Image (cartoon, rainbow, N blue to C red; front, side, top):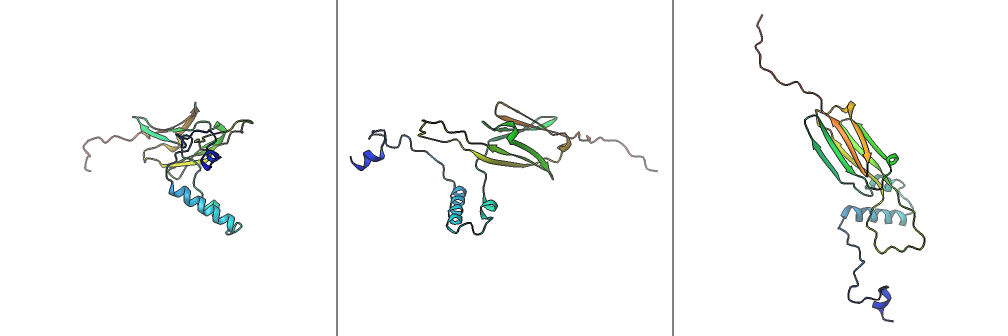
Length: 165
């Protein structure tokens, strides 16, 4: 058995890269892996390096729009349970965070390609000045988190004469 046959469990020679994952270059992820490997090498010294340098495991896609009465933020969170989602507002910043947990492996199933990401995520956005932060609401349905950011009614400028006394 030659080396190519050993490396090709499907026995196909014309398309060896059929199941090879296509990953985009992610310099930050590579840097995080390097730090993690160095940490393992030095047995955890310094102890908190991983926590201080960790990036989110995945980043959900977000759409932000507005109409006359509110801003609307929609985040795609497929396979995330409602209880694993947090929406917070602090000091003029909206933060959506949570975790998509790894599914249990099915016995007897061999995966040829895994592209879905699991783990923690966090997205933060500065609130527009006219947002009424006390009236923000959110709902989660069919894998989409929708956050409603009501606008404060702004006094419209009017023109009128001011009497001089």
